Image 1 (cartoon, rainbow, N blue to C red):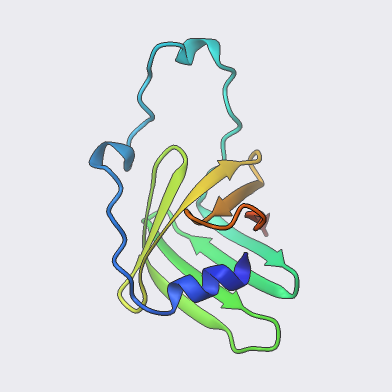
Image 2 (image 1 turned 30 degrees about the horizontal axis):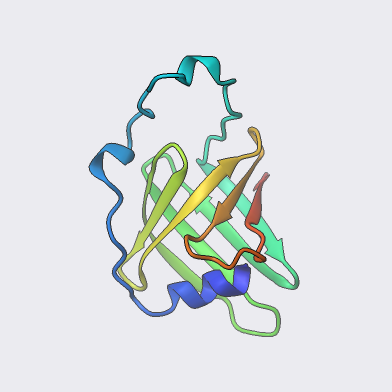
Length: 134
């Protein structure tokens, strides 16, 4: 997964924007929302680290909606990007002048972890699991 993420951020690629109602606001409440148990929540502000095989990704998200993403593939040079971040209930959009936009889905694993997946990733590619760093 880390290698696939690294490959996805190298060339600037225009991604379709997330719908306006999916960014920055609370999730819409629909019929049946009351009956579902509350999902665990993760405050994405902070320092995070994920690894897949010998590849690692360090991610820092600040309270003012900026990010730094450092991908270190095994045996290769690190790639570092920075820019702005937008989130929705289960999506994240990382926008960098250097490499374009990367949109992914997130799944909370509680206050200290979350999973990150790229849309269209192969079914056998597990999501990156980011764990909070001190």
